[in-house]
Image: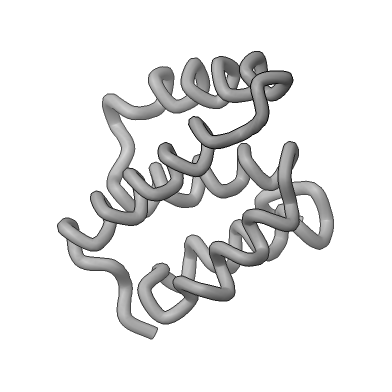
Length: 96
């Protein structure tokens, strides 16, 4: 499975951020928590790692949206990202 090119990774990251911002107002604290976690890891993270992190964090709050996103973009996501996100959705942990 081909992994996302840097420009595709940037597009996916922007789409994930847009979806986070589109969450209901009551989810504002969740969005802030995700942004804090993102900023902690962002300095040293590759685009793949950032996408996986964002999707795993969002999976805690809105698993249905993550499943939909993964289904729509599975051909553009790296195998590692898919594996980590699917594990998070099914077992609740990144690596069971």
